[in-house]
Image 1 (cartoon, rainbow, N blue to C red):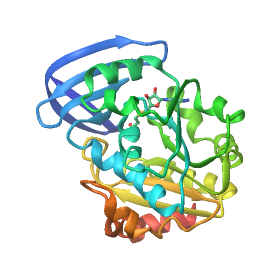
Image 2 (cartoon, protein in one colour; image 1 turned 30 degrees about the horizontal axis):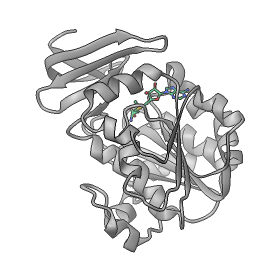
Image 3 (cartoon, helix red, strand yellow; image 1 turned 120 degrees about the vertical axis):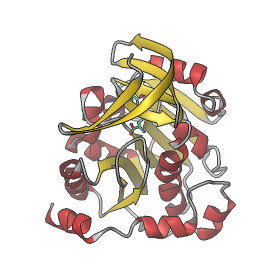
Image 4 (cartoon, rainbow, N blue to C red; image 1 turned 90 degrees about the horizontal axis):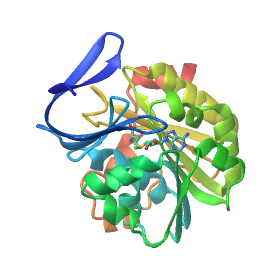
Length: 277
Ligand code: SAM
């Protein structure tokens, strides 16, 4: 690996991070898995040369993926995580004692094994006694889910390779069937600058199946220049409304009830793109 990790935003834009050390690199049946230490961002899990998490900014992404739907749902008891092999989403779910059971479906066993070995939070996260781990394609898994869920958290990579199936219309239809009445699905939906067609497509597809669809934003520097988007589909409560008492009890670093409400306020050009989608 070169001394700089180059993150590709689009065909004409790249961001690079200086690599201090390469800790691990292998080819699994699904992808190339690397763990590197970046001078500015700490340890990073990299799949097919795309950064998935880094020690320094992972908390922003995982707190926003988990706590927004979890504090909008009145009582999330059963949660499904799709993807999420780095354990960051599980770590945030550990802050929700009302969750009784967590299923996590990850396609690549090696991502979990490598994360547990190299990422400082992962071993504790995967030791959650409420967790059942499934190694399977999340889209296939949802065709015959073991039960119905209150929340489905889609912690997916970019929609290329094995991750592509996690952004399709059929996936969202199956997800709705796998949710309890009033359940919610949240997915990362890409950069507002470099993946706006993806964000619009996710909104359009979710709106076919879910009564309420809302996008919210946070800045995750190792994912993209500028805000990153998340989109939630709800068959019940308004995801913009937060249980502030529950939000206050979480010992978070980024997420608060105020951040929850503010994150749904979109710049006009983004709102227009979604209205026209
Ligand atoms: N937060 C990250 C991001 O936006 O880049 C995603 C991180 S997480 C490591 C993504 C995980 O999804 C990977 O471990 C990958 O192996 C897994 N994955 C990809 N396609 C999948 C599929 N079809 N079913 C289940 N897991 C999948």
